Length: 134
Image 1 (cartoon, rainbow, N blue to C red):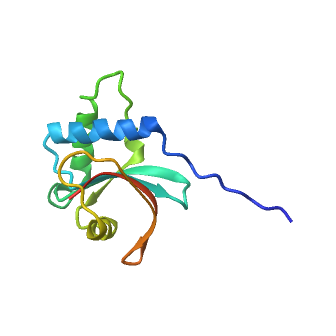
Image 2: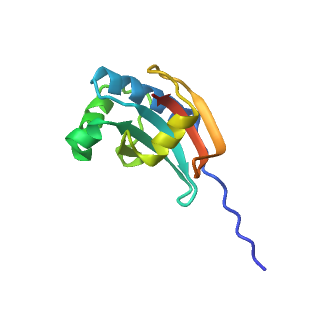
């Protein structure tokens, strides 16, 4: 019998640093980001950078992606950058975000909280790195 072992993709220090830079730049371009975090997706064995904003509801996701791309252009060349393909935008009322918010809040600054192996309101959080959750 052959056993398949899946090795979990690691959240690197470079990814963590890139997240800090992006959250700061989102603030600079005045994008309301109620939540910003890396979330591990076990079914894809990958990490996604998730930005939750009420502006997704009012402006639509395409416009928010454009604003994120604009913010990314402000990040200095020597700093790590998250590829746009690894970023997802959701409404601030998204089920995952509201579940996380019921368990913790960071305030409006830029934090660094690892949140792993937790179930909140029936939502399994395999692994996450939270910068902001208001």
